[in-house]
Image 1 (tube, one colour):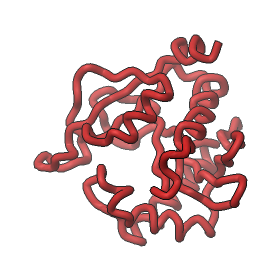
Image 2: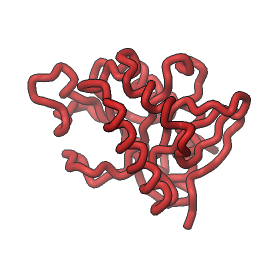
Image 3: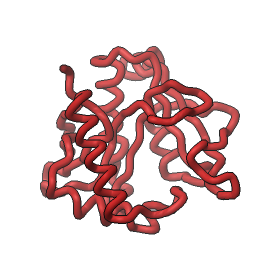
Length: 186
């Protein structure tokens, strides 16, 4: 089985381990990190999510991977690819996503780790396309998508897992085709 686990210049993308639990709980309860999500997550919800990610990575060899800084050995969040487990208007698809602790924002970590994920998606898994999506006001994630060379779909969509009355329901969709990624790498 091909595994996404890899090291970049500054980061290690790996499966989750027990010592990551505290960091992941803190991340999911930080109102600034979770600003563009409908709510923060409880310890129990976070633990369940971490266990699901561990299982998926163990079974498939990829998923939303824990990201560890090589210089400190500290887990700073996650970056990875996965197939959403719910219906989307443009599915089925493989998405790339990230969530980092805010003290690690602005250092290029999300982009660096996501580039390793794109290489895995296109070179190892042979995917034709990767998508990413976020709530319309999430300028930080949109900036990462654009740095990755992704292209915005002209229309927004109503995220099926966000309540109709929520101001976060409308999402932007970005796409990156394998051919476009290969051209950018040349």
